[in-house]
Image 1 (spheres, helix red, strand yellow):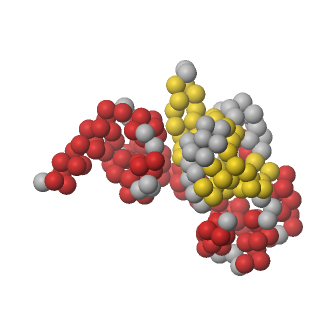
Image 2 (image 1 turned 90 degrees about the vertical axis):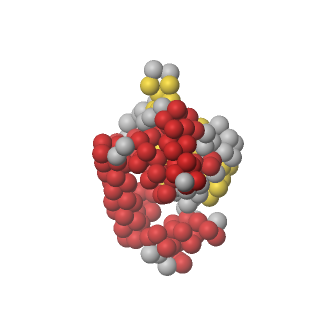
Length: 193
């Protein structure tokens, strides 16, 4: 929990008391590998803060998983669209590793926001962060080559490529697994030369 406290305090510029108020409202929960954090078809009415582990958010397209996002240590996790709109989730959030997650319900989070102005500020900052992240992801999908998207992913999220299988990386980058193999081979060859 100490790493989470430091991360939250630094990310949102909170003092010790504010950090404690925020995190004390979460419930520590453990999930086994392959456990579902948020199922498809149900309203996602909770947010998690991952202390340990890795999760994936996936859409089901004709029986095939399309990976939308990964979340690991010090990241929030939720189906934000379902959370905000109170509509059934179109995606599933599942654990790729054993996870320790601090969870808060939407009701509790809203109650906190009404009590403490800094929670509303955090919410605004998180909304801005999510918007910028999605903007950059969409821009990259439209303008960058598969090789550029792979290089950006590896430079921005270095440990991810080590923690997930190649076919998941390919799904996330919207390319075939063979494309990832070619990109990796080209990168390793260019480093040898």
